[in-house]
Image (tube, rainbow, N blue to C red; front, side, top):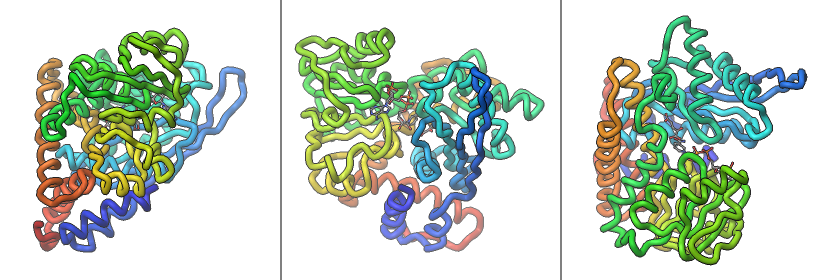
Length: 418
Ligand SMILES: NC(=O)C1=CN([C@@H]2O[C@H](COP(=O)(O)OP(=O)(O)OC[C@H]3O[C@@H](n4cnc5c(N)ncnc54)[C@H](OP(=O)(O)O)[C@@H]3O)[C@@H](O)[C@H]2O)C=CC1
Ligand SMILES: O=C(O)CCC(=O)C(=O)O
């Protein structure tokens, strides 16, 4: 995946006439560490879990990115996610480079105490890599505030002092910030709402399909539903539900709490079960992938009907499918912009931890809204001026900032402006 993603960098370098040194620097991660976590299970047996932490590039500041717990996590996935984080942090204009980590584990097969041991072991393994001025961790798929609290507690024990700013996404009572829980979804929501007029989207007449019903998918559904968008399809790892009359995200979540899946939840009309593959091709105005990478590929991209794809997941559209869809006039609001709200509020958490002064929710939300609107507008303008897809515009927007930080270190001019 990293090789394919690098194509976006190559294109942005070419368009900006960036000095080849910049491409060379961003071609590979700065450093990736791997570790095997040896965990004592509740039944007394011992199990080994592969894990990684990648710090991709730190030109703009300490590296920042989440930790994913998933059975398919691989080195290539983590390095690609860290590459995307590098651009995402630049797009959001944060003083961070990009990083990502992961453990190859199915959290659904662990007890709470096993999950705690995995979380603490992860920090123990990578502690020398971590730190408020070095590498700052956060949640991603199948990690949440509790996992981050265990990790933060472990990090403080290892470092021998309270070190809240080494991890973000912490519970409020443990140095977290207001607004981080739904920040990723809210950021995408602000971006979409900012583009409504340009995309001729009328919330009262627009339909939405959402793949993934965890932190990002659920909050996205809730925010869009509250504004009048009709959510007609929702899925999770167990499959999905479709109802052309609309679904109430709160009721669907209630059903998921009771049964473990969104399958079988009831909407306002004739609700039917659908697969994840079907959800992607459903006729709707806005498709919101909010689960895993590579969901829309050459195999199914011809069947995508949604004119707007809001990439709340990281990398849900393959490189090849992206070109095809863009050529056909689909507007893809790219991940490095659409889901940058999470890391934007993580930055605020880091700032608050470091200053010891804490903000209220409205302050955090105002900042997030302003950031999302500013960067969305800049990318939208570039997309129009250069007649290029929004993803290419976002990479150019981020690359300009990364290249500037390279240049600021005294190297001769790295790029000629477009
Ligand atoms: N959390 C954050 O702050 C950020 C997250 N992201 C990205 O957003 C995406 C979702 O993350 P997040 O919501 O935090 O993760 P969660 O772990 O909270 O939720 C993941 C959701 O995806 C579902 N899912 C898993 N596999 C599949 C599948 N094959 N098909 C459909 N649905 C599936 C899960 O289903 P089930 O409930 O059945 O397990 C769950 O509902 C990821 O790509 C992540 O990298 C990006 C930026 C920040
Ligand atoms: O909040 C953060 O620091 C990172 C979130 C993340 O992992 C992501 O944006 O993909």
